[in-house]
Amino acid sequence: MSFIEFKDVTKVYRVGEVDIPAAAGITFSAEKGEFIVIVGPSGAGKTTLLNMLGGMDCCTSGTISLDGQLVSGFSARELTEYRRLNVGFVFQFYNLIQNLTALENVELATDICENALDPMTVLKEVGLAHRADNFPSQLSGGEQQRTAIARALAKNPKLLLCDEPTGALDYKTGKVILKLLQDTCRRQGRTVIVITHNKAFCEIADRVIEISGGRVSNCYINENPKSAEVISW
Image (cartoon, rainbow, N blue to C red; front, side):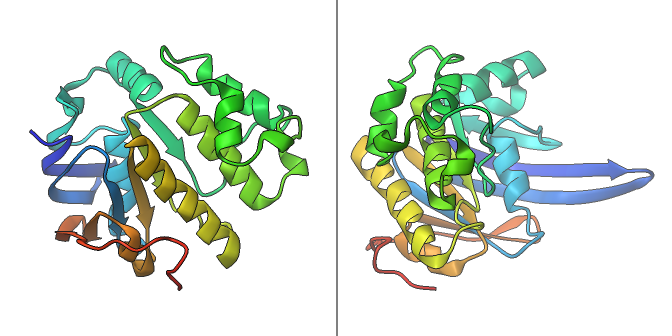
């Protein structure tokens, strides 16, 4: 069994009397320690896929598993535990708590985990030890996103899910964040998934999953992934 497995996964949202399909039979697998890019246009089903894998939403049919756990079979309580212990989330708009310092934002995540990493050590790893006592309003966009990444990593999750992590950043800062995520995958052997509409990101991935119309239109291994430092878009 692969580390991540989706088998014929569907998701249908009911709006009034209308059924809206967001996933129409997604099937793919991925291995532990891979840097995975899921790419597709707006409305293709990328975020729905991420939400289901992250335990924030349930599929309508099909099966989802992570590291041998049948995520699609979890109860609401089990999903809460799964999100708390197994998954780190990084979003486009940081979602930091404004009245907490960078260090306190990271500490908040470690308070709910069993095998959390030392918050200050993780801040140092993302290059923000010198900003530990600053509030989000005192940080640049790139520094806020690095704080958000540190918060996710400090949980010591099996899986790091990143939804358009460079979407709110300028080009130069976005490359820094991509490099940080890629290095995290390489150094720690952590499985990282980046959701994006930007096809240039495919060049740095170990595995690329293309989504279109709620389905996987293509899935392939990149034999020679590039460093995030050298790609352009």
